[in-house]
Image (cartoon, rainbow, N blue to C red; front, top):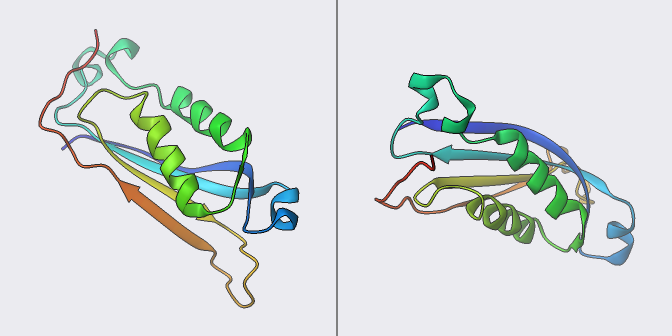
Length: 128
């Protein structure tokens, strides 16, 4: 199954369970995997119109995460998933992962990660 992975997009967002924690933007890293039912036409044509623009997807995710505040990493992941789903061909399976690097928990040095996955549909169509 063809897959495109975007790894560790760094975004400064206002995230936390208290207003004080959300006051200063903090880094989260967003990763996502896109599973396609068939290989994109760009594999054969080497033309941009036959692929998904991951730069545009990164811009869209960055925008949605920097324009408001969030209480939970779970909501952040859901917002990322929705934003990607709205910009991708129907049938793309999406795995969205949000990594909060420095939660205010004593001794938690690796951060916290939340991940959501959409089911893959049996239908697929590349836009011309």
